[in-house]
Image (cartoon, rainbow, N blue to C red; front, side, top):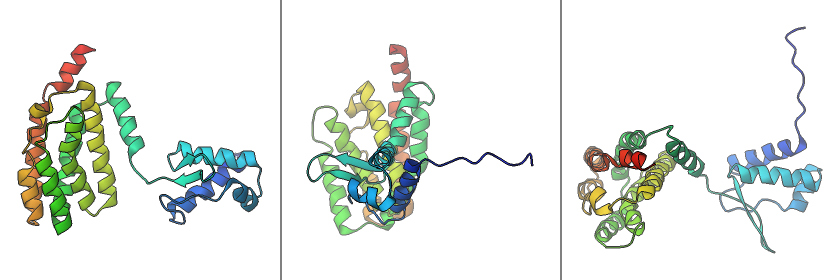
Length: 238
């Protein structure tokens, strides 16, 4: 008898939330789709307006939907991203719970794999986009536009790898490094001068998976060397 545990009653709003979340995760509602209206959900679940609103707020808090106001508004399914992970890691960094070097080391392990897969799945259309992005790197713009230009190739390679999980993680890491670096506002020509992606792009367009991995690893190692000291300089200013 001592092994029995008290029965926990599930709140009605939690049950509505769970069913709607399952509908999103199972693909019944895709990114951009509008969930049934508040009135429809009240009828379908046979619950009160308050219960439905609590469930929708929970979905919004979890980053699963975005609420739009107006006549054509409602709860719309968001694209699944790692924005929350990136945001949390950003906070952990500035709380001193992880170092910039640790974050960059994670990129060092993941991005070469992404580059190799990008080479495997490269198409003429993607090759054209890579060459255009590479040509635009030499443009002189204000901060942070220059950083965005020089990160575009990394975002393109993430899209090309044909693995949505790796794409999400890689983009999250790129975004995180950019967010942290923006606090320091370093000279982009010093930490990421134009032309650093040439060998990567050549290998990817040639379909050379091993060469793309090697070129990306070499690029990131160079990048880490150029970033050496930036974290320490920031800590000294605090």
